[in-house]
Length: 264
Image (cartoon, rainbow, N blue to C red; front, side):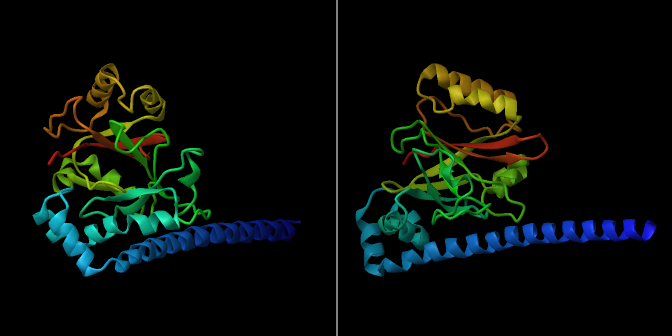
């Protein structure tokens, strides 16, 4: 009887081990596949000629000439917007935080808000998902563009947002680039929040900042949950970018990194 029980327990152990191994392998494989896909997407920029880059630098006033000269890859990504849009009609821009792993295309599906929660750029199922814009946001019109991404344990997607819990990390990574189909935009981080899930639900009523009253609620929310004071002032006349990912010290908590657009 005892030997039989040991055999059953051994079988169960092996079964659990195999199942967990399959899950881990699938997760690991999806991570590798996702990174390879992002690199492939970036290769689209090679279609952009040096002449196109030079012409853009000299003729365009979207951002300062000196800044553009220093970042050829950024220009190429911006000029590749149309080819990327042709690959996926949900493509709306590219987000990059210098010095971090955050360097991704941004997607938006208006009809299915969480479509990219578990899908990659090519719309295939992937646990890493994609970086995606809130379905209620209208680029160029919304006062606050809200972008979501997973906090992956392999350090990909929006995992680096968790590092903003320390002011030291913020001080050396305070700028965000979010270039859309039509404009190149630099943002200065103004606040970092750690929020429990039940409190996050309250932001739905004011996060898009459609009115001054909603901006005031936004300001109060920041004061209640910010981790430290950045010393950066902001007003209702500013345009904002809010990045959101999971935070694990709370059950279903969230990290919010809020930035304001730097005016030329």
